[in-house]
Length: 350
Ligand code: ADP
Image (cartoon, rainbow, N blue to C red; front, side, top):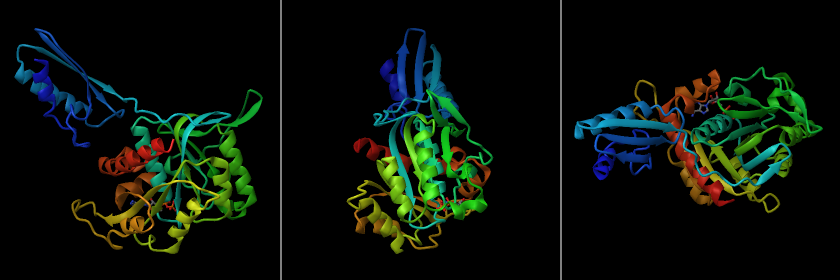
């Protein structure tokens, strides 16, 4: 009977992953007696929007096949993914992997990608922090709706610690907490770097699987200083189709590959790859040409991590302080694919 139950569960497909419950490894436990069948389904992410629907489907097919049995389908959420081994022990906790998110130019969506990747990784069950080091335009506080946050300094074991903001299970420290938008220009250079050093070493991060760093756009001395402090494990480069042909992206690749820097490039994300209007969700308009980032990736021996279209929910999510991955299932799917690739690489580089 258990084989038959398994076969039936194998006919139910998770709409987002496209995997059935058996092949997707979601059946954690299965037991049947003469009068009762119990199935435990494990959903990898907490608050999976399809959990209830899938539970009902499982109950229906099983009660139809075995009307004599009492059917019990139990849902468990938030499966523990294999975590990267802690590598860096900071004075305030341990951070397993530091991923830098970089771009050749501003305005290509580097901060948006950072915020959404953080939520995608969180949804996969990882403990995530963001260090917003974009001194020219720190936008993470807005993306997470914590703009007014004033970091507290606390004394712990005789040391000063800075308490990060926390929103949507993500720990966030931003240079934006320390400067007014109007000051930004003054903060370029040594001052900003010193402030960043403090943020890197004194923030009470606790234990993180991933710390994503939103770097300033471009390449320069500030980048080298941050990179020198942070022990970055992998870099993700964000570009739009329009910008990918421009020399800045190549300079970014060269910066990470410079023998003195020597940071593995996880790959390139093409943001704003196409436009899909709300009212015509199946139409794709490649406003700035198609396949540019893929070609760039091939020519420069960089991996292509995936593409994200221009969609309204992404822009609105950033404005509203809730990254779209947490709200729009389409966006979550695009980002999850990219996040999975990054995790694979980060684990390998460990
Ligand atoms: P950067 O960090 O590279 O300067 P941002 O992440 O701040 O760029 O993005 C610039 C603007 O573009 C923001 O208003 C953001 O909401 C918007 N944006 C970024 N990516 C997308 C996207 N895929 N779809 C719609 N709007 C986007």
